Length: 360
Image 1 (cartoon, helix red, strand yellow):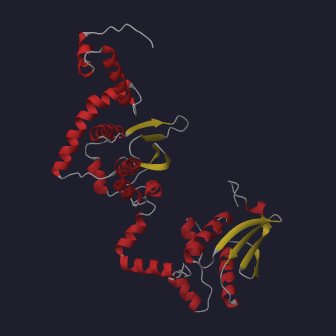
Image 2: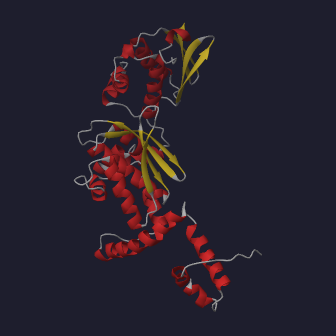
Image 3: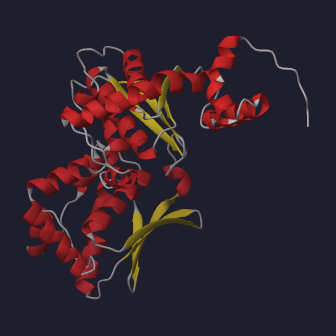
């Protein structure tokens, strides 16, 4: 046991009075209780100052604001489990504009700094426990918004809402989002959006947004289609009407328009590695084949297409479909088929297909 002489002013002695009363005037016992309480209060806070700010400002404001919002009917209490379920099951669907505007007033918030200051204040007042900051990477001057602490689901929701607000009102887009267990980093870039949601935000937060809007617009159609795919274990073929009509008439359909639209360039300008990637997407969407892979054998590129057709005429048409595509792109190759495997062996060595970034 260590014995120390402790000197304190009467002001602090008065603050110890509840502990003295509890311990019948025993100062040592009172100080021990105060230390135990201080230790518990400091947990979850980075410093004494941080804890003092929380208990002297945040905790006094939070219950009052919370209770008034609940009493007015503007807010409701919901369990963390229920809230997490809502967030996780709407992942990929963008937060509506009216919710973003309700959270961040575009008439009052004019800069990213205004936004972060407002959000930090609201987080303290509402007891969210989330801290938001912004910094600039020295190497390329990229601005990065950092959200830390708080509930992970609420943090994810706020990250998306912040990004949408920045995209709609402050001409910024999101190039990348780095999610960790206790933080989210949003990497920003300039973008003129004209009030539309920029593509980077859709890519990082709204990959299912258009999909769900289509489902809501035609629920009977999509419900029926999904049910058929489920019942038939995806053993269905999904074709464009023009492609199907060409097959019905005995012709070989031209699918170059699909590739040109996907690549954003004429078929002759699409490199082989990109043709392969789009072919994989086409096969996945249409179910014309089960898989496609690219290999290099004896220094030459092979594209292997696996299918489940047994009729020779059907297999020949599938070979003709892909042959027509790669010939239109200006590639020479030899097609072979064995059982359920079609192999396209390109005649030039793989080095001939190298692009500026080393891909083929």
